Image (cartoon, rainbow, N blue to C red):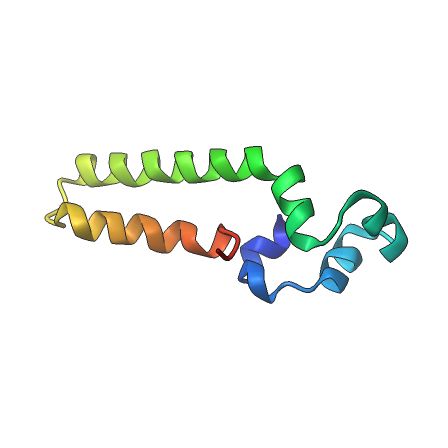
Length: 89
């Protein structure tokens, strides 16, 4: 998760994951077919929670601050906040 905060998902190499997690390549591939497979299995609940909580945070900010942003602009802001954390389509 710390790599996701630092870099775009697509730019993270398996070697970076291995180094950060202090895990050997063979151990990684025993549990994961590839980077995408591991992400979707190990962190999908976390990703859902992240997206949902970010949505609520942005909505509360918009309502409480009485921002003059249009709904589309708030939607664009929300999407820009979650886009780096989402796996590529």
